[in-house]
Image (cartoon, rainbow, N blue to C red; front, side, top):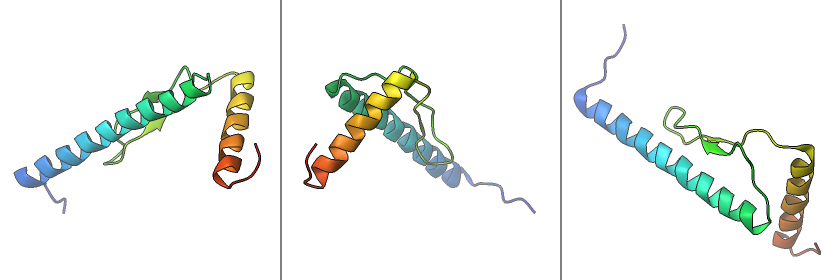
Length: 86
């Protein structure tokens, strides 16, 4: 037997999906800003809408050069967070 959602349940689900979509938009903006600080751009970076009731960010593809530079920046940031040398 399939449970059909009540009107109130549908509204709550829609609100959760809207919140997840907004979280995805904010995550994309945050990541774009952080990448820009390092002079990097992921051309395919986008909000891929909610997946269930969770935000989902599609990072997409990039060149080998960009992937290697991104790895360097992430590693340097991780070392800085740990208090190590860049």
